[in-house]
Image (cartoon, rainbow, N blue to C red):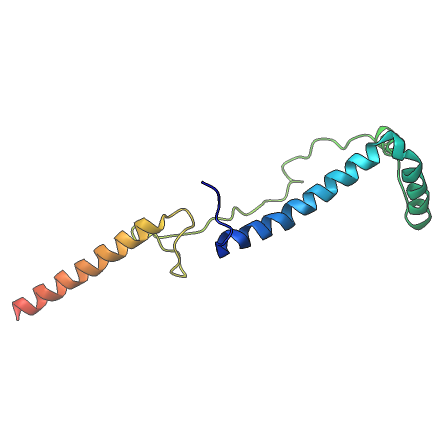
Length: 133
């Protein structure tokens, strides 16, 4: 079935896509125009204007620099900086971290069921306490 024109949400999503794909299309168009042999004169004129404003480095210059300077030797273990592994700590029983938030990978359905079970268990304990009195 076709997507309804009247759906506000679909319209909004299509507008967002239009913007995103418009940018990509513009980049692709610019790239094809720079590769077009009929458009070479214009690009050379643009390059000369760019060279006046900015410092342009050609591929040959970069290759010459890399050949002239040898690559550094393999870094030893003392040279490598110790990177702290970023791990979020969470309680395996409750699946919550220290701030009370759940990990990203926990499905909302699982959260709902655990909350429901926790609530039921609380009520059962409360009833047991009241019955003992």
